Image 1 (cartoon, rainbow over the protein chains, first blue to last red):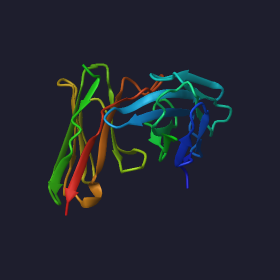
Image 2 (image 1 turned 180 degrees about the vertical axis):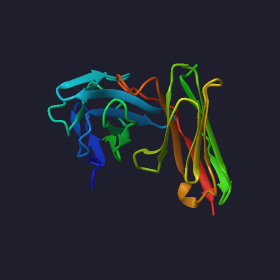
Image 3 (image 1 turned 45 degrees about the vertical axis):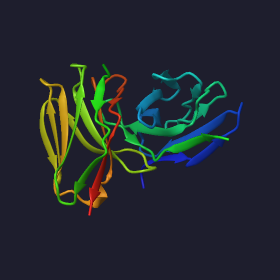
Length: 112
Length: 113
């Protein structure tokens, strides 16, 4: 089945640790996005990429990093500089800039 | 003023009732409007996608856009318990370009059997 796969479903981070969230899509979509969802705050854009080897900061990029080495993959690293990382992280993709975004099922990150 | 306003609810309705959800927005440049449904612990699922003003119908779902009032609505007819979810509105200036979406906070709906 075609879709967007996020892993792991649940992730725990220790203080001072970097963790990486995986996002893979087999939809042949060019554009990929990372959002953070907090209760009562809706979705906020962290980073997005419209093409391989290129990505742009979103509204809340501080403490996060991404890479886009392959079209199907857009991993997100939550660094130790992100002081409030506990949230539900959602990856999305779109066929191109004319199409609406489709989402994966998210990764819930918590602090140990 | 927030770019997109959406009443978080929760909204409880009996099975078979019509569910009415809405969002208001401040940016008159928004042209593309979407409604997503999100079940607990899942990602949002695209329900409806409309361009500019007017109505769009898909089965039990109807999306309305009134650009003059900066107001969009989603109606669910003959609601079912399986419609219990959080509904998110989203909009963008243009899907060309960076395709950045502005989201409402989501409206929780509970359909009571």
